[in-house]
Image (tube, one colour):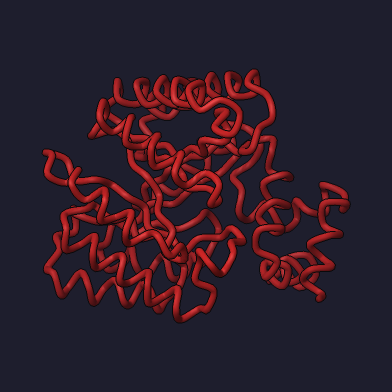
Length: 303
């Protein structure tokens, strides 16, 4: 009940107070701030993927603004010689307004990244978007097989079937690059696993399938149980270090992140930035009210 109460109150809280919590997990409002964070991570031997905040837009002119912003981001990241790639959410480009316009916007971004021999990952959003985002990925992968990837969510009951249906793409020269995460959106129990161990078991099942079937898995987790499980699977299948990577969110479990890097595994950190940081923070809380406990610690204890 306390978490739910905080979830309702936080969007009404002054932005300066919410920033006390958010600044640990968001690179800042500007591209300059994000570039600074990216360089700091690169200096520690960590790759990055950069994301401009602002999903679930309501107008197509916002989609065009976001596209132009990404084109500028790509030029800046490449000019600065940052070791990283790009992540984006299709709802930032009009997915729920006009699917075809969304496709054209994202295609322009991927074409730009491909010109630099770089890579764009399509983030997975809530279940209303899943089929549309998989279809979007299929279309873009047909044209840019080396330059586009996708995210799959282990708590969704459909995920292993989705991986099976997409495994044919691994017959091409370049393995399919999928980020595997647990999933954060609140979904009905009819379509999503709910229990902690249940989700973890399916996460490792999905990862094992990916390692067995030629995917390039981006192992996105802050859960030590899953990190240890990934180590065991990597050893079981003798997977070379250039055939997978670990991923984490900026500011989350830096100690665990360091242990992975120290073992010689590739680590990539997801770096979100933008003026929509307040909306992003409050949406994340609405999607996952259990985060409220961590917010209390950040605000009043400094945890």
